[in-house]
Image 1 (tube, one colour):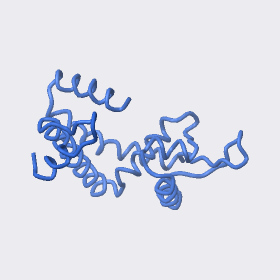
Image 2 (spheres, helix red, strand yellow):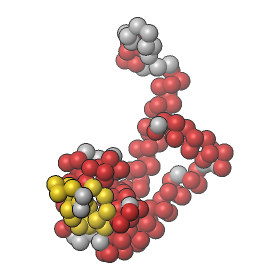
Image 3 (cartoon, one colour):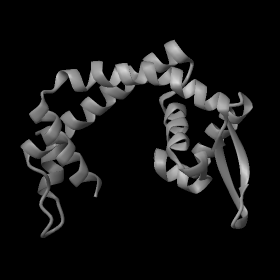
Image 4 (cartoon, one colour):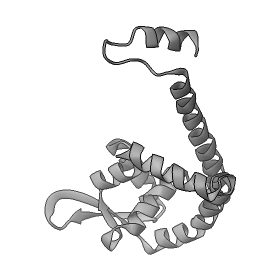
Length: 159
């Protein structure tokens, strides 16, 4: 454990002990793995498809939504971006014809993002790069037991 981590653990609030060395090591390994994989997949998508990982995620979320539309707030939650971040991203995707904005029928003030046919086609092509990256940078490095354990752990952490 680093000196900073040791001091933080020593000054943790009563009844809330700081993390152990093993817990910090696991946390840091998790963060490194996530950053390494997402950086590699982002670089591949940009190089091969001129599409960021966040833009790809927006297209996926819209493709899987009923009617290929989501309220902007739902889209922001689904892609883990701030509302302003998703607004800027949808602006860029709208300018190139991959998504469109439309009013929410049941809410006069609500705005939804919808996937265009061009967006669906772009997603189909980009998914080849993305899915190959999932295999290369993630699945091929783990055996079946690792994948099962990681899925179980990830679901627990997400809940």
